[in-house]
Length: 300
Ligand SMILES: [Fe+2]
Ligand SMILES: [Fe+2]
Image 1: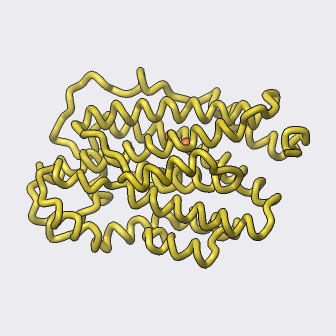
Image 2: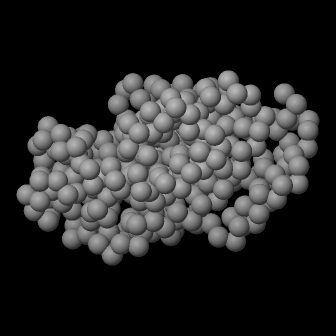
Image 3: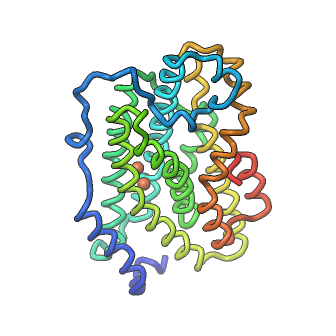
C-alpha cells in the first residue's frame, strides 16, 4: 500500500493535530469523574422519557410512573451496552488501520488517543449499566456474528463511516439526556463525558471518510455505501434490547408490538439523524440500496 510511504498532506496533519491539542486540554477519567458510590436513586429516570421506545404509546399511558422509570433505566443500560459492543468493533478497526503506520504522524497518535478514549468509555458504560441494575444486554446472535465479520475485515471509508454513524446516533440522544434533570445524575455525567469526547471522534471519522473516499473507485464506493447502511441498520435496531420489557415487568409481546409501531420514536430518530444523512449525501454514500436500509431503520 502506498499510503504508508506517502506523507499525508497538511490538511490531514491539521485535523489530527488540532484534535490532539483539544484532547490534551479536555479529557475525562470516568473512574474519578462519575459518582459511582452514591446508591441508585430510583426516583430518577435512566434516559429522557421522550427517548423511550414506548413513549407516546397506549402501553406507556397505562404504566405507573415507577414502571416508566424502571423502563427508562433499562433502556439507558441497553443503549450503553450496545455502545460497548460497537466501541469494541471500532477499536479493532482503528487499531488494524494504524498497524505499522508512521508513529510520527499526528493521525497515528490521534487514532491511538481515540482507542484509549473508547476503552475508558466502554468501562464507563459497563459500570453504568451495572449500577442501573441491568443484566448483560447484547445484540442477537446473528447480529453479533455480522459485527464480528465487520470488525475483522472492515477497512477504509466503510470503517470510518460506520464509526461515524454509530457515534452520531448516540450523540443526539445523549445530548438530551445529559441536560435532563429527570435523568439520574451519574448517567448525566456519563453522557456529558461521552458527548465531549465523541465530538472529536466524529470530526476524525468525517475527515477520514472523505479522505478514503477520494481514493475509492465507483464500485468500491457503492459497495461500501451499502456496507455502512447495513451496519447502521443493525446498530440502530440493536439499541433497545427486547429483553428490557420483561426486565421492567412488562408484557414483552405487547411491548414489542407497540414499540415497533411507535411513530413518535421513529420521528425522533429521523430528526436526530438529519445532519448525518446530509453528510452521507455529500459523500455520495446515500445510494439507492443504502437508502433502503436507512429508511427501514427510520433514519431518513
Ligand atoms: Fe465512545
Ligand atoms: Fe468514538
